[in-house]
Image (cartoon, rainbow, N blue to C red; front, side):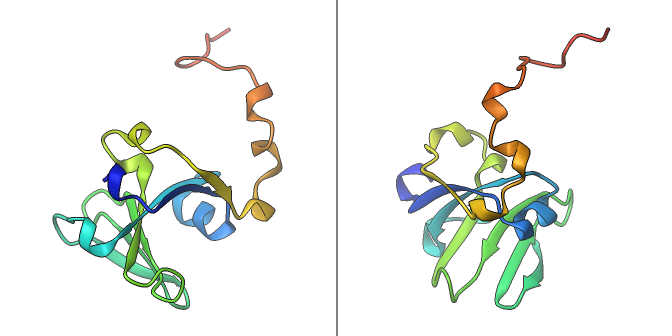
Length: 118
């Protein structure tokens, strides 16, 4: 999929945050014909003209479709891929909606796994 990716961005919009429960969502945009979807994901209209698709078995958010914004394209939640690091992230979008504490993540303590319990 990485060679077919049109762009790969981290979205901070309120809709993505609410749909995913995460502070931001990474999206890899591809042409519909360049992706093969196994099974039948469920969908819902999160806003006019927008369809969000998710796994009907486990509920994982998978895709975003909006023919007005991205005709013939599908946005794939790249963190759901087996190797999301294979697609370099190119930009952050909708940063006007970014949660304030997301701007300075690099300044927080970082742990390879859970921090020690004290």
